[in-house]
Image (cartoon, rainbow, N blue to C red; front, side, top):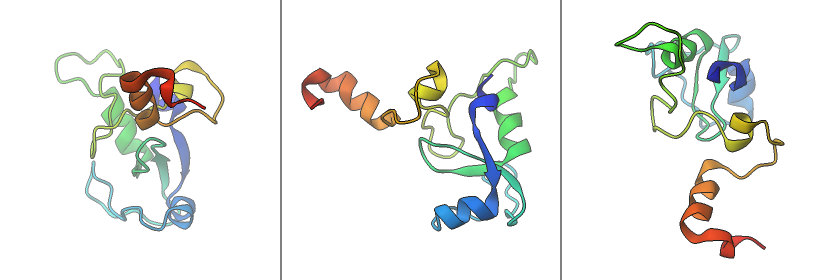
Length: 111
C-alpha cells in the first residue's frame, strides 16, 4: 500500500528541515501543531496529518475496497511516491521531475 511507503515524522521536525512548509493541512484545513504526526511527501515536500493523507490514499467514491486510489498529492498532483519508494530502489534516486525529463529526452541527459 502507498501509505506504508510515505515518510512519517512530526510537524515540528518537518518544519525544522523545511521552514517553508505550510502550517495548514490541505485535507482537513486544520493547523499543524509541532507534535502532530504528519506524512511528508518526498516528491513535492507537502505535509499532511497522518490520518488525513491515509484517508485520502484509501478513499474511493465508487468502491470502498481499500485500494490505493489517490496516487497524487492533494495539493499539486505530484506522484505520492518516488520511483525508489514504488519499486524498492535505494533512496538516492532521482525525483519524479528528473524521471520525466529522462523519459522525454532519454539517456542523453545522464553523465
